[in-house]
Length: 441
Image (cartoon, rainbow, N blue to C red; front, side, top):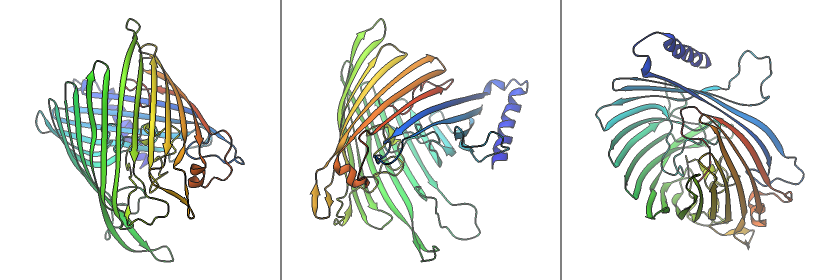
C-alpha cells in the first residue's frame, strides 16, 4: 500500500512537470502541523504517583486535485508521527497513509455525485466532523449525492464497510466504525436565518465470541439519529442566537433500546472596540444537555447519547475529558454550562477564555449511595497569531478542577493536586482560510 502511495505522489509531480495547456487544471497544496504538548491530567485525572507527559507530534499532508470538464479528482496523503518514534536511520515505516481519495462528477449545474474516501464535515461538527484537531483526522468511505442551489442544499449518501476482499462471509471487525450507514442532510440559509436537518442511520456489527476468542455469531444493530444540527438567527446587529438538538433511537450493539438526546442553546454578542484596528470583544453564554444512563444500570432503555463521528474536541472543554477517543461513552451523560470570552486585537491576533461547569445528566451511585452530580470546572485559555498568510501560531493552557464524583467515575483515588494541559502549535496551510485548529468561537 505504501509503495502505491509513493507511486501516486510521483505521478502527480510528473504531471506538473509536463508542459501542457491543461496544467492550470491541476492544483497542488499541502500542510504542516507541528504541536508540542505537556499533559498533566489531559483526557483523565492524573494520579499523584504518575509523571506528566511531554512530546512533539506532526502532521505532513500533501493534497492534489485535478479538474477536467465536469469531473474532479482529489487525493490527500499524510504522514503522522511523534518526534523520535522512528530511528534516524530507517528505510521505511508504516506512518504514511491515504486520508482522502475521491472523484466528483457534476451531473448538472446544481447536482453532483462524490464517491471515495472523503471527509464528512457538517454544521457545528458535533455529530459529523473531520476531527481536524487529532492529527490523523477522520474520513469515510462514502457515496454522496449533492443537490445545491442558491440558499438550499440537500446531501444524500451512504457507506458500506468490510474488513477486505473475501470469498465468503460478511463479518466486520473494525472497532468504533459502522458496517453500514445512510444519511440525509438538508440546509437552508438566507439573510439572518439558517437551519439544517439531519437523519443518520447507523449499522454497527454485534459479535458473539466463544471462549477461545473465535466469532460464533454476528448481526447488525441499527440506531437512528434525527437532528436539527443548526438553528441560527441574527436577532440584531452582532447578536446571534443558536441551538441544536439530536435524538437517538433504535438498538445498541447489546440489543438494548436507545432513547437519548443532546440539546444546546447559546447566544453570542460581538462588541466592536476599535473598528479602525478591527478589534472586537465577543461573549458567548450557553448550555448543552447530553442525556445519560444512571450508574446502577437499572433502566430498560439506554439513555446515553453518542456523538459518534463528530469533532468532540471543539465541545465540552479542550482537555478532552468527555466523548473524545471513546471516553465517557455509555455514561451518565453531561450537563455543560459554558461562558466563552474572546478578544480580537486585530485580524491577526486573538485571546480567548472558556469556562465550563460540568455535571452528570443522570444519577451517579456508589454502591447504594447517590453522589453529587457536579463533575468539575474547566478553564481554557487560548491564543492565536497569523504570522503571515500561510503561517499561524496557536497556543493554549487548560486546567480542570475535578470533583470527587469525577474521581469515582474515572476510578482515580488519589489525583494530583494540579490537573493541567498546555500546548503550542505551528500551522502552515497555504491556500487555506482555516488559520487555527480545534477552537470554538
